[in-house]
Image (cartoon, rainbow, N blue to C red):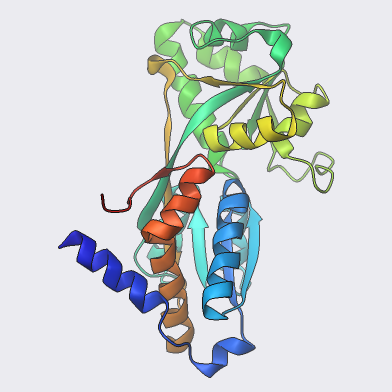
Length: 273
């Protein structure tokens, strides 16, 4: 039954498209961590349907604010459920769907020698710089602060130390921008702005593709933090909402979820066996 339902939804996503879509692209706002995965999904979807998709990637909190200020958006994919739900509560968007999961990892310079067992000691080491995303602006920062709270149970005083030394390198809008074409996490570590960066595991894999000497270190069980991503359709005129809903269905389909899995995300659906 579930398999038939998924196939039906996928079929609906590829029904002939109304003429308006030919010169009116859909606007997809999505978390920066989704750049590679949803960028590929958008290209595949356009090739299959002819519907153009304009993508905007960045910190989820910043994107939510831009939507609230009136920037046109049809579909919003946030790195947490909270930013999507805020738009829903404000009457700007429909129901929020959990569409993929992620996890927090530590990405470290090779010479740091970090392991899962030694990670907390390395992060607390005053000689090592710890980089994070910016809390509230970017959910990745919120997840890092959740890790700091967990660290307190393992090492008295750890929360205060970690919050005090954390360098909010991405999402503040204050520091110089990451050079075009560079992976942000790899850039901060290669430029020694950080020795360890708390990033999504998917972002760690992307950083390693650019800088092979970097280590992606899984968090120990006591510090593990998961991330749940929310997807919502923005309120608009009926034809645009219907078009955005079809794109959302494709992201949730086995084909869309397979792309997300290739980029290191944890799918919420999977192809039938």
